[in-house]
Length: 246
View 1 (tube, one colour):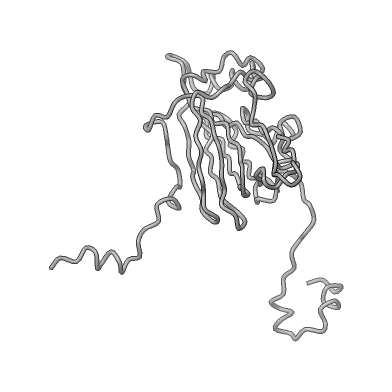
View 2 (cartoon, rainbow, N blue to C red):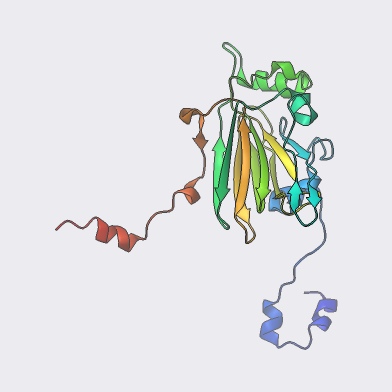
């Protein structure tokens, strides 16, 4: 502890001073915040986040929530052919909703990328997301599952990790506010196949989300990584009693 801080805490006894730690509230750089969970959705909007920090193919786009005084609020998800979805040419074939109770988590989930027959996976991703990144017509949305997510109520902490062959393993971790908390952190998120994703419901409210997928649900395309939090085991003493043979 520096001499300045020692003087600041001179009113404490020696054992308390030895154990003392203070929190660093400085903003820090975005790369660090994306790793340690202090980033907010407004900082990772597509076109705002530095290219070297974003995950290729991941899109985070702002949504405006309109307050209707004495009534509630109104907000659109997306319009087919418009906005970010229209720009990249992706539109869901299936829509679903989910509720995550406060304090619960889901993931990591990952969907298999569709690699053309005879194509090297690494070369294919380089073409899709580097050399021809703006040629969205190359993307096989109809053959692989991309997710488009919206958050209606509560707060979500989103984790994203790029696991595609040959791509830099970039990670993004940030907070999204539901529509019931209008502000710059109301966003939609598009996640490509091959990018692992997990969601944690933070705060005291249940998290309600709506999501669309570029393909209809196929169980074998739903990969799981480090998903033990979703399958909590019954207490050991319960199982001993349950499995007792008499």
